[in-house]
Length: 365
Ligand code: UDP
Image (cartoon, rainbow, N blue to C red; front, top):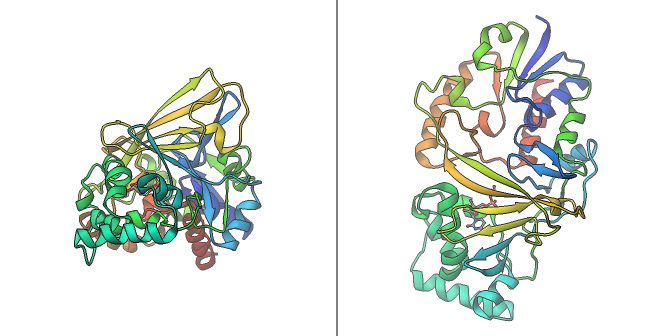
């Protein structure tokens, strides 16, 4: 056997593991079925602008170890995510904070905002939130749920909010301060020059084979290494034998516009139910770009079907149970480790992906 590890998938999880394994003196081979590395954090230059081809990624973490780790591969800028919500032409600040409450209700002080939320929570009669709708109303009241959450969430997940788990909405902070920073993270930024360069640096000196489909050539590829780190979809690995896990997929309509500024912000969410896309990304603003043109991507969310790119695991009860069955099978695969968003069917942020890969390194290497 030529390699200690065959790493399937050149995304963030695979690249972090590959880097650490090489550093520990292991022989590694990274393969990916795409023609490029970096998985869904891949960025590509268009008109001098780094376009987040598989969806916008904003790096944020509270973990100093993770922050130091990524900073070894890229310089991070001071980008702070502050999306704007557009509800039928009315603009609101996100995440939910005093600017949002002031615009929604005219309230001026934190006490007034708190009182308004409390009134709406009491009027709803919800005690123990059992789904996303109830959780959202309990957190921010009915008006914000109706204008800023309901339509967006139903478009994003293709399911009514009453059928979605409440934890999804807990990702969003609610603040009684004037703070438009979307994340409650100590460290945040975008790698200068794009994510692709950062991942390429992690993979520096490592053999990478692109356009290489693992599942289609499993036997030959398995024979090359003692162990496999598999970061693809866990259900695909087992040929969907218990049925397919559900994912949400995203389609991007990207356009180059002959003007310097289209929407004045990197992210604008369209939170009504009728606009067919969920948000528009204006890529240059991730890097404070001053190019004469601009590149925008409209994001359309759809149910994943075989052949599409899977993006978001649908972590509801049904899929959770199905995943557990696959996980049992995965544990029986002696020389294969499943990792990452698709391998673990988990709604992981980038920092959590890195932490999880570093934890595996500690165990494995
Ligand atoms: N969300 C919402 N309105 C918004 C933005 C987000 O209701 O304007 C909800 C929605 O349910 C979404 C969840 O918050 O799925 C998490 O949003 P986040 O921005 O964290 O999603 P991601 O960046 O992973 O796409």
